[in-house]
Length: 257
Image 1 (cartoon, helix red, strand yellow):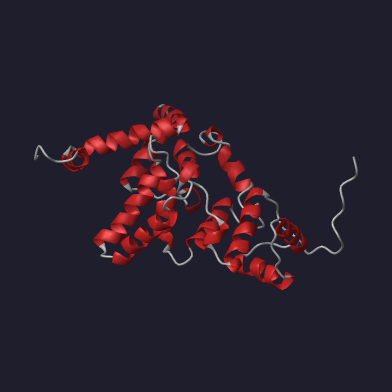
Image 2 (image 1 turned 180 degrees about the vertical axis):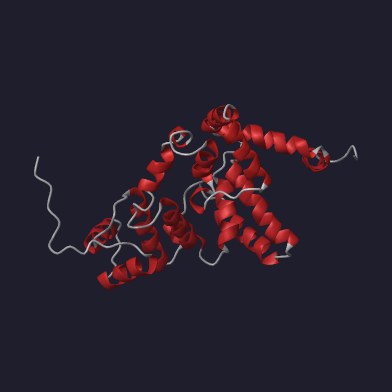
């Protein structure tokens, strides 16, 4: 390489032209560091012949797990074995499913997705999500495997399929976050209709329950200095599939101390 090349250019050159094993091994070790449970699972599976065969079949594509066990911890549990053999390894799977739709009928990830969608506004959501995720990644920390995968998918779409709009919107997203504190998106960046919905989704995210009353939303909005008519709140719930508490009567007040 040219001796005048920048350090960054040298890093890119090595990443592109070193052995493919270098990046693969680095990612594998990063996964093991980020998820101690994966190390435990790997040790568990390595001792069970049937589990090793399922792992080999899943990696090679010879066998497809059932639809309910094709990703995440559920996939690890399926590879580890049937109930009584492998599923006891990760009880968090059942616990996760139990509380999956506890935000008014939505999952936590669905609520976060709605928040990001309203935050993005006229910026393409995919570029906004990627930019936001990288903004939240500390400069001195390794990016998560999820962030690396998402970024790879984004670049593949933008470059191999020739989608210049994605890069244009990525630039808009970078400009949107420029000079703003990490994790802080202020009210001044949004019109009133989007802001009150963001406020409600943030409330739903931090106050999980099976359903919500319109008056509960009203009380929270007034506390934020916002006035929204009941009919708009009902439409908001209907549009986003948020379960409402339709029981008659006012909720019981807490007993005085």
